[in-house]
Image (tube, rainbow, N blue to C red; front, side, top):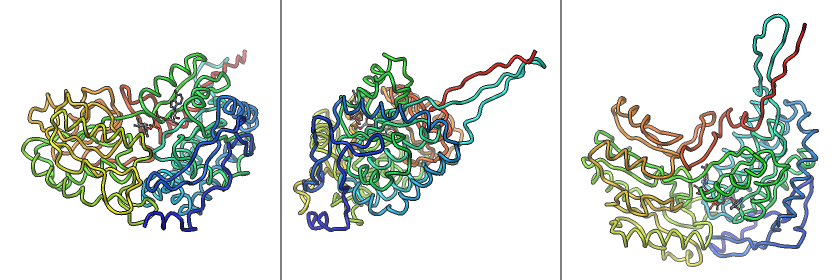
Amino acid sequence: MSAHHLSEPRIRFPEHRQLYYAGGWHAARKGQVRPCGSPATGESYGEASYADPDDMRAAIEAAHKAFPAWRDTPPLERARQLRQIADILRANKQELALVDAADSGNPVAAMLKDVDIAVSQLDFFAGLVTEMKGDSIPMGPDAVNFTVREPLGVVGRIVAFNHPLMFCAAKMAAPLAAGNTVVMKPAEQAPLSVLRLLELIDGILPAGVLNVVHGGVDAGAVLASHPLVAKVGLIGSVPTGRAVMTGASGTIKDVMLELGGKNALIACADADVEKTARGIVAGMNFAWCGQSCGSTSRAFLHEDIHDAVLERVVDLCGAFKPGNPVDMATTMGALVSKSQHERVLGYIRKGREEGARLVCGGNVPDAPGLENGFFVEPTVFADVTPDMTIAREEIFGPVLSVLKWSDEARMMTAVNGVEFGLTCSIWTRDLARAHRLARQADAGFVWVNKSGAHFLGAPFGGVKQSGIGREECIGELLAFTREKNIHINLD
Ligand SMILES: NC(=O)c1ccc[n+]([C@@H]2O[C@H](COP(=O)([O-])OP(=O)(O)OC[C@H]3O[C@@H](n4cnc5c(N)ncnc54)[C@H](O)[C@@H]3O)[C@@H](O)[C@H]2O)c1
């Protein structure tokens, strides 16, 4: 079934498979390529050029050359070009989502929403270009003192594999709107939707304003450390965040880091059992196999409702059936790669060994058609304790750890007892308790009686080792500017 679907002509893979910089396509200088293929069926999709450090340097130089003219382009003209890109995404939504699903393993229904998110972020930041405002500072009658906000120069954006198209299209928006040029490094695992997007938008932006260089760790390391790059933003894991900060420190470069999470969902004794169970399952992002930084992968259930909620969670997991990602009916895709698959299965083994109780999933599904894919069933462990590996480390897979609690203070110590601090979801009908727990949670983004959703305009980002900086809000735009103060003596 799967191979049949993937061979249908409606999936339009990109013809250009090279690196995109200086307004054109370039083969990798040493001719390197990386194979592309489906994580769900094993089908080959050919190959794509793969940058080495010299290729990355060439792209950075192109971005540097293009910067002065883009900086001096009137902001509303920059906005017009970003909106044109948004229109092209909108018009080709189905096609781009299909390529993204085939290449990344995430279900096409979810990838259609990713295109919508990218479109709204492009529109959002296009609408904010005139908000790059400065201040005037009163100095008395003999002087005028004011600040202006200027773009930084070349911005590097290094992104993770879980939303290939959305991260590329959405994360270019703020720095470009602010007048920076961009060098984007997509994740190595799934480059095809981004290449197709570039084919579609080629020629809209002036040459060198947007450069997209498919490559691995060594190419990313050049972007982080290169003296011509003014700021680097990363969406990735905590160890990569450390490496990027170290690389950036050589030139005192600012960083924006959106890193991993081991996020808590807290269900209080008075929480609605049905709504909480639905919130737990929604927060796990099982559709894309839990491969989401914001996934609430530790559920702390109060002992009074523990058994009832757990039973409903297990029922609701039944709605997620691993299947072919390009099929609109598929509710759960495949993990992105063999190494991710092995990593997730390793954590499931560890959970069993350390004494957690497996109440759902835990296996590679054996349904016909899924033999060659990196699938894992939605998996739930109960009786997890805070010291277990599956309660401490980010799995980035469809594995939920359920912990039982009775004492609020002890539970909050466990919630905050990890190195991460991205999201937290609190379920209660008591407003005062909701505020108290929200204040105590070490997290950059807290939901009450909700999970999973992002809200454009509301700052998203982490505390502790989950990152530095806030995105999806005006702060993201301003983070790609710097203030200059000008003092004019009128005397
Ligand atoms: N906070 C967020 O918004 C957010 C969103 C999505 C994913 N993530 C995190 O991303 C991780 C999963 O993605 P991943 O496995 O692709 O992460 P990763 O850290 O392995 O890779 C992310 C990107 O960084 C590049 N990279 C790796 N090492 C590098 C180095 N030394 N220098 C420069 N670049 C380097 C990779 O090539 C890739 O493009 C998870 O930890 C997840 O939580 C965070």
